[in-house]
Structure formats: structure tokens, C-alpha cells
Image (tube, rainbow, N blue to C red; front, side):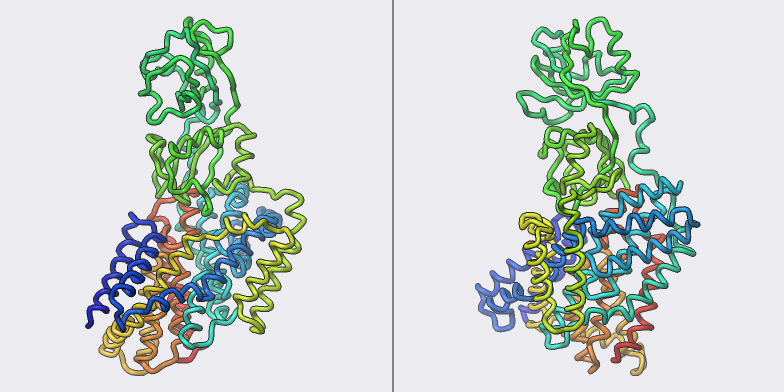
Length: 605
């Protein structure tokens, strides 16, 4: 092995460890790998490593460009209300038996997800499913995992179903092979949808536990709190006291949420702050707390007081749950840095993350996409937040403005046109998608600013970084070395006529494990070059192996972190990590079994 091969293998191990460790964001890991490769190529002038121009050529790969375009197309369908068409249809079936409704929901969601990015489908339908669960008298947790899994089923059925399919197709094309066709994957995707739906309806739904939503951690009285903003007057006896020592906050049903001083929220625990004249106190009051506060001799919550507090605003507080969205600018920042209360006029009462409810030290909590927030605020504040891309309000579906909804036929026609033209293979899919994006922008379905915001740039950065790493693995022979090692293992234990099938199973298993703990795009970018090397070593067609990698990188059911849609329903449904393993692991095995049996029938080795 040359030093270049050792170097690339070390980079590969670093990337895998960093993805699993999660201390460094995945996109930053990918950018770091790309930067190190660029710097090394310039510094060493090695003939085994990719050249500087070769590394930069990954930006010309059509797959990431196509993926970016499909993000925009999916966002246009979401914003114009096209995805909401499912809402009315699903509501028609809520009086049917639970299993029948579950089957219909799975098929419907999968049908949409086959042509639209999975994440917006799940995000749009989460509030709908929560509403339907209340109407049906069923725990939301019984429907949210099937919602996520159904979107994954749909993604395996077409080329546009998920970004990993497009990425694998792009790697195939760059390697000199025919790219994947629009409905080529349907041969294996549809059986996975069928058997997956049957499993969830007959067995899987029994394994899904009844979990309470985030609101359930509050007492009945806490749910009826309202928000009061009180002004601390100059002659108040409370000035100079630590807030925790004030009689107002000692078991009287009044909670101090925030202190605003000179227009800026005081950082840290508000109860540990020293009160000053002129402070604005944001209070959450229970009905019993208000009555007790009015009975105190030295303070009052009305403007004609005698104790130093003057009420300036009172809002009846409504409790709502919301999820930090994939395009949220608040992700990666703490609630204190965001100044959440002043920016959105909402109070965060609790945060649900990775199966844990957090109610303390929220000011220093760094938000992540998929975090579920329990918030309190006025109706006006809730409506304002619901119309932003920061938090998806779960208590009410977002209704597009009438002017935007009028563009729905254009968005639908454009999406159908993209699928039709891509199926005919008259022009490359990247050109078809680019034309579709242009039509959506020119017709006013989306504004350019909204289009840019709808692209998940972090995913593109992961793809570019892993494409560069895959290129380096090919040029140094690392991919071929790994391929030969795996091939030798299989040859030592299997007869010649079974080696290709066993290798398909091994590739599927490795890719599936990578997908559960890494980014699914990273998994396919790393495994497809190895699959191509294995095909060369065995002297067979690589297509069956690549199809296996596509399915394995999408069929992520056993953990809430393996696929983005799992992450979103994880917090909303109040699930525990093991809930996904209990329900999803058998489903992983079902998908693997279906793939191993079906792929050799339609794609000959």
C-alpha cells in the first residue's frame, strides 16, 4: 500500500467516526475532507491522488444539481398546497377500522413520496396526522412512525423518490455506465412497499407503543396559564432584590419567565437576577396564581397598584407544539442567542430531544432540526410563527395564501412534466429539472429567495465532500482494495454460483448499517464506488449491486437518526430510541430479503 492509500483510508475512517460521533456537523465533516484533499493535491503533486481540477470537477456532477432542483420543486408543491390535497382524502377514511385506515395512509403517502422529496411530505402531513389521531381517538404515536416509514417506501420506487437514487445514478453515469431510469427501481420498490405495508398493518402497529406528546408533561393548571408582562416601577420595594427572594415567585402560581432590561433579555436563570427599577418582567400565571397575587397587600397585577408592579400587557396563552424545521435559521443557535421570546413573542416551556423532555436551562440549549418545542403565546404570535420556516406548528396545518394556492395547477403540471420527460430520456434529467425550476420561478409559484432557502445546502455539501472522497478512493486504489478484500471473504465461504448473490447481501448489509448511523447520502457515495470495484473483481454487471446500495441507503427504519423523516417524528411522537429498533429492525430484514430475491430477477449479474 502506498502512502496515498493510507492517507485516503485515514480520511475515510475520520469521516465515518465523525459522522457517528456527531460532535462535528456532517456537512462540516464533508467540507473538511474536501479541503484536506484539495490542499494535499496542491502540496504533493502526487500522481495517485486526484488532481486539483479532478477534485473541482465534482461540482459539475449533475446529481447534486438535480437534487437541488428537486428540493425547489418539492418546496413549490408544498407552498402551493399541492401536497395538502391528501388531507381531504385521508379524512374521508377516519371512520374505517384502524388497520384499513393505516393501509390507505401508507399507500397514499408512498405514492406522493415517490415523486416528491420525503421530508416536506412528512412535515406537511404531521399536523394533519395529529389532527386525525385526535378525531379517531388513537394515540398519535401509532400513526407517526408509519407516516415516516411510508415516505421511505415511496422513495425506493422511482429515481426522483430520494436524493440517494439520484446520487447513485450520477456516480454510475460518471463511471461510464447507463444512469438509472425513472421507474427502473419500481421493480424492487413496489414489492418493498407491498410487504412493508402488510407488515405494519398486521404486526408492526402492535409493536408501536402509546406515547404521550410533549404537552402531557404539564399539569392541567399549567396548561391554562396566560402570559403577563409587568413593569417594575422606580418606587418598587422589589428593586435590588434577587428575583428568587421575592414573595411573588414563592409558590403563588406565578412563574418568572424572562427579564427584559433596556430592551434586551437578561441572560441566564431569571430567578438568579437582581431586579432593577424599569425591568420588564414576563410572567406566566395560573388562574390560582392570579387570584393569590391580587390578594397580596404589597403587590398587585393591576395598574392601580401599591407594590411596584404595573401591568403593561396580558395575553391569554395558548400551548402549541412545534418542530424546528430543516430550513430553520435558528438551528445551531441557543434560545438565548436567538432571543426567542422577543423575536417570536413566544415562550418556550419545554424541549423534547432524543426521547428526553427538558424544562430547565433552556436558555443555553442549542436547537437542532427535529427538536420539538412546547411553546406558549398569543394566537397572533402563533399565527405569525406558523407562517415562517423556523418552526412547524403541529397544532394547525399551514394554509397557503389564496394567491399562492392559485398557482397549484402550475406546480402540479410542472412536476408531472418533469416525471414524463425524464421517463422518455429525451434529454438528461438535470436539464429537465432545471427547466422545471425556471417555470416555477417565472410563473410566481416561488420567489427566488424562497427557492434558495428551500435547498438543503448541508446535504449538498455532504454529497460534494463524499464524491471527492470516493474519487480519491478510486484513484489510489483504496476502493479496489476494499472490494477485493470483501470478494476474497465471499469466495472463501461460498460456491461460485452463489457468490454474486451473497455479495449483494453483504453490500446491502454494510450500506444499511452505514445508513443507520451516517448520512444516507454519505453511505451511497462511499459504497457505490466499492460496489463497482466488486463487480469488476467478480467479472459481473455492477447494476444489481448499485440497485442494492440504493435500496439499502433509503430503507432506514431501525433508528430515529438514520433518515431525516424518522428524526422529525421522533420528537413529535414522544418516542424512545428503542421504539424505532423494535418496529424497524424486522422491517429492515424484510426489505433486505425482498431486495436479495427480487434484484437478481430483474437485473442479471
